[in-house]
Every structure is written in C-alpha cells, then in structure tokens.
Amino acid sequence: IYNTSSTIANGLKIGGTVASATSAPTVTTTTAASITTTSSSSGGNVTADGGASVTAKGIAYGITANPTITGTKTSDGTGTGSFPSSLSSLSVNTKYFYRAYATNTAGTGYGTESSFFTLANTPSAPTVGNPTTNSVDVSVTSGDGNPASTEYAIYETTTGNYVQAGGTLGASAVWQTASTWGTKTVTGLTASTTYTFEVKARNGDNVETAYSGTTNGTTSADETLTFGNLQ
Image (tube, rainbow, N blue to C red; front, side, top):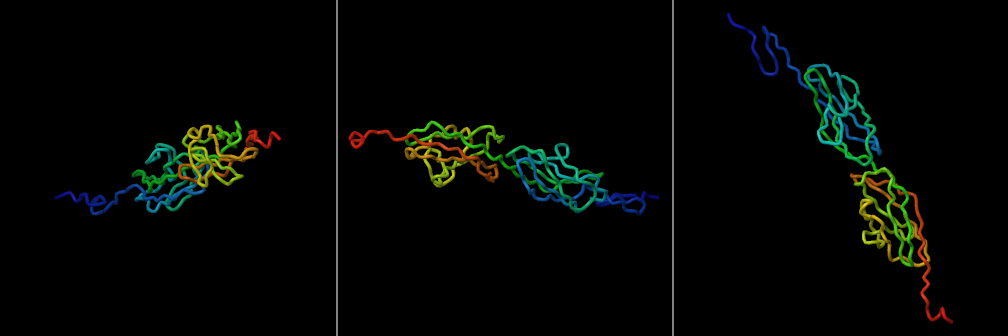
C-alpha cells in the first residue's frame, strides 16, 4: 500500500487528478498619452489570468520608481482583456512612474514600468523695467505654479531673438530656471526704442508651453550733446 498523492511540476497530483497551481496574472502597460499639467491617460491589457479570476486591475503610479497597489492606483474593473485608465490630480511638471497591475487570489502581476513628466504651466508675462539708453531689466514673474526646477526662455519679439545668459540678444533659446535668470539686464539695445518681451517654459521632457503675455519696455532717449546740438 502506498500513497498515490505526489507533487509534480506546476501542479498537485491527488489520487491521479492534477490540480493546476495558480499564479499572478500577466498584464501589459499602455503608453501614457493625452498628458496635461495635471492628468494623463494610460491603461493596460490583462493577457492571462494565471488560473484564477482577476478581481482588480488598473494603473499603479507615483513619483518614485516601481509603484505598487499599496500606493496610488486606479481601479479599472475585473477580468482579462484591455482597459483604459485615467490618472488625475497630478502635480505640474513632475515626473511620474506608472505600470499596469492585475490581481487574483495568487497575487498581483505588474506590467512594464514607464514614466512621463506632466506639462509645465504657461508662464505669466515677464517684468520689464529700469530702462537706460541701451538696456532694460527683464525678469521671469513668479507665481505661475511651476516648480522651482522649471526652465524658461525669454523672447524679444521686435528683433526675433532670445535673451542670452549674459544679457545680449541671440538667435538660440537659452533655458534657465527663474532663480538663475534673476533680473537680467538686456544690453545692446537702441535708444528711444520699444522692445517687447515674452516667456515660455518647458517641462522635464523638454515639452514647451505657449508663450506668456507680453510686456513692453522703452529705452531712454540718447541725450548726449554733440557739436550740432549747440548750433
């Protein structure tokens, strides 16, 4: 007499009957799309249930790598198959990690992790002041809701050039944080001339915003006396 029950690979043989072992579901992650300053869409596809009913599926996401269902997640139904998902209440210009998940009685399976940055807010119009005959001061206005790491470029519309790091105007955009820009003295300007400045921002994935509103500044008149002025 002997016990006919024995363990075999991937299952349990009991009295000649093989009971399949369950495993966590298999799921893939849909690439994020429709990204805004505070939201994104994603989703996934549960391609195998692991031998037990899928009781929950969705997207796990957060600002640190390898997000799990113990953190922030969406709940997007049950069962196998593809599903859409919406991520909301996100922070502006912030990197988020995300991956699909699916849960059954054996555990939770995760799809491949990916990441994206939410968009930056369109900046406020810059501040322009302190004109001289050949310069004005320009600064990026605070209070646009972007994090301190956000980078900005300052554009002058009359000449079609960007403010450079040293204060001159040039053809290429220079990207710096608001604190790095500080109050920049833009030099090399012409006396008695109105200059118009606007600002754009970009997020951590280098996706640019629209330009801000514009602010004008007029350089002072050149009152230098010449021989002709004295006639």
